[in-house]
Length: 230
Image (tube, rainbow, N blue to C red; front, side, top):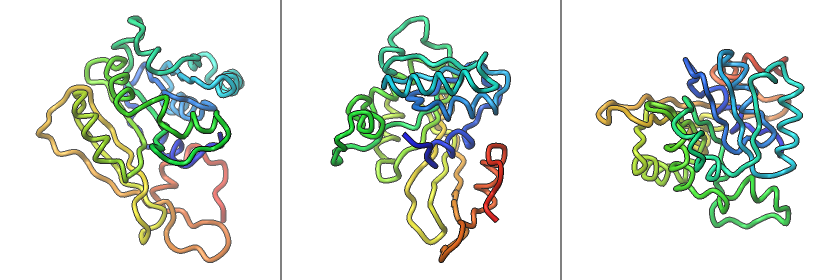
């Protein structure tokens, strides 16, 4: 699967301050795991992936990176990984760009379906697995479709998570919100109002030429983009 905007935004927006053990669930090619390793230079990062070819690619990418001594890729479903006692309650941050298509038409490519549709990782399994793996006050950080935002809030709160902050994402100021980035704490004060942010990727309508990215988008991705379009 190609690297997408969802993964880039989550990897750069997520709070990793003080995190020593970070989990990237459904790591795919490993992009979020590697970006987390670059940002949190004290952290050990574990990527968990079910699809065999993606596991191979993620391992190759990790081995070729400057962070090869701190990034490991595990071939497993997140449910199985979370069921292992040694993995429970040890992670500071659980990052996930999940397969969130639900009841949508499918591709003839099984690997693509696994990456995009939630058959193998229903939302309830996702939040329950995160709850098992995170330490006390650990952080679940997720990118999610806006049209299923209320569903995520309900399931996360049912599992005992408290919303800390969130950001709505839209392509341009005049377009609809499509994604929500959110940070949840495994224990916290339910009376504290979560921080809210609006992120626009482009400044406005593009007629031709390269996109005109907003200053916030450039700020988020600044350490990872070699050269912005003129």
